[in-house]
Length: 442
Image 1 (cartoon, rainbow, N blue to C red):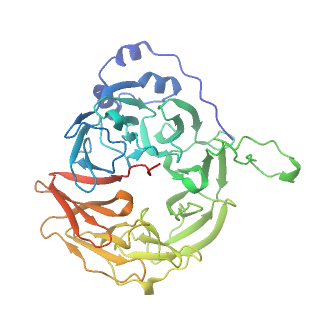
Image 2: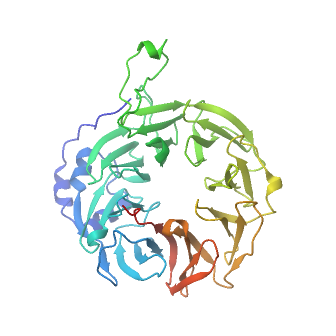
């Protein structure tokens, strides 16, 4: 069932004055709760503005056809855009609050979408990076943002208010969905939003409701039938449109989504009421649980999907020891015998074009590499006395960008196959890096 945008409430007189306050001051009020309450379509439209967010830092040319790296400095508001490979600085950007989640780049390479946890979305035009950035506030507390494969739709999920906001590429709201039960009696914060390109849809996790939602942006999506019907083929029920409609997967209880397989056909979830470590596997095609698997320890909502040429795998991390759990994505069986002993792992990274799993340890000056073909341990990378803080793949997975922490921090680029270092530049106080690949050549 789809929800039409809610009717806007009467505009409060003080808001008309407040909306003329500079954007950063509004953000400060929001962070302190001064703008607490509901946030509706009229509020979203009123918040829309343009302001300069970036300044040129090097070559002023267009970045649309360039592979880029985005580095986030301490505090999360100060960003650096660099050329991948050479790490040549291109632009500096400042956000109203700390970056929330992963930056998203449009399929044509032109636009960069950034979000903050207070609900602000920014669209930066990489063709004119120093020009005005489009800014809009979709809610009060953002928990997820996803971009469709065709670049036409963005979906923002919120913990406050309990809703989803669908926007077009110009950041104009198209539809608001209250994240509630079918009868509207109970609502829930959104725990996360994911893009499933193979399904041409968005998947939505709900924190308090025993449901998973799927919103298809495929114009040919099948109709949605909520509840039980005698025979769908005889059209013995009233259907709602499949395109941009809400397809619900009902569950026995609320769940935490850990992650999905490579296509997001299957989601791995932890039932809220479980007291022993376990995962349920939800098949999103048939919309029900197909497997329940006991685990030796509770998993974190992180990990990596990879293919070793024979089958698809999922590598998950355990909460307490930082051990690695390896699951076959066909049978969902655990295979501890295939892995060397690993502990204190805090992050796993993989890319289809890279031949290794990259494991970051709690002792931050060491990275472990596992060959995806046979999962044998390779030579670790070390940065004595200078912890690794993050890594990201760039240039279609051909390169990996590594960041080290502190006042003496830097960025380095290595070939993801040979591991040869290609470039290194100083960048103090870096705390995260993201690869933003250019569009495929026409």
